[in-house]
Amino acid sequence: MPSNENPNPLVRVTDLFGASKPLEQLVSAIERGVGNLLRPIQKRRETKVDIASYEDWNEALKRTGLEASRAELTLGERATVRVTAEHARTQRNREAVAVQAISDYRNSVANEGHDESGAGNAINAEWLDRFWRLSENVSDTQMQEVWGRVLSRKARGAAQYSARCLEALSLLSRDEAIKLERLSRFVMSARSGGIQTHFFLLDPKQFPNDRANELAKEIMKIVGALHRSIFGPAGLYVDSGSGWLQDVAVDVADGIADVSIARIPYVIRFPGNKDCISGIGSGLGITPLGAEIFSIIETQPERAYVEKLSEALSIYGLHLTPV
Picture 1 (cartoon, rainbow, N blue to C red):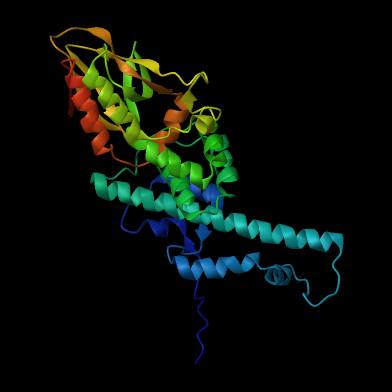
Picture 2 (cartoon, helix red, strand yellow):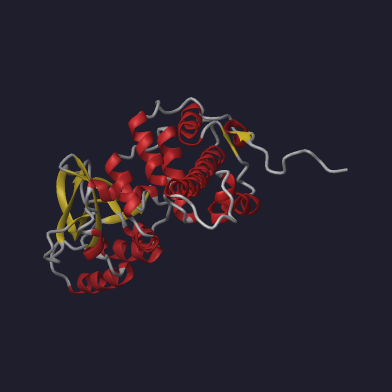
């Protein structure tokens, strides 16, 4: 006896949170972008086949009530077919990003061991509309995961991403995103003159030293290409175009400078208990926009980089240690 049940029923957004308590801000953000009902697209294969049928031209014809067998379509009918197929594609992308956002939220609750359902503030409607307008054109699965992470963190209050960050993210190709993912393992951050700065420390020396020079070459080899010609004009680097490295200085309090490498906290211990701004070498500065983009990437410091950096700093009596 045939079943009348829909094999791909629509479910409420809140049902996708599983055992996790839904985060009100995230639910509201998703409902604004995809509606309060969507297909259970954690079943990726079934849903991808099901929703992909929208992109088929003949299927689009059927859904608009037009007949594929007709020899000609009017201009208005052709526009209707195109719009139907386009709306289906963007809806599919929005739903995929929504599921990634929910997955990121559920993982954050599981990993951090506490419920964030009351965290965060209501997300600005203009920001949300921009987010969905840009993310609906993202079809790559890995990039959809990135966009889902942005929405999840924004809703949880774990990070703030500017409109400029969303625009820059939307312009990144998958190849550029892969390059940034590799480089994110070397991104350092510290306060300098009371201002939070971000940079690649490439030549960690305070004065000329033969061993320090050798280590600087090894560090630059580990870091590899910085792709200045791509990410400089994109506004991610502080780069005059000269190709020269820039001085890097950090705030020191009681002989300690707080730094991070790939968002993991470290300290640099200086001799004595001085309070000052001290130079620790030279490198390439990262703009606030670049820092936002890099902060989206989940990564760990490159071990070889940290080891060489630590050895180079120790030549000058500085000690880099994890917190």
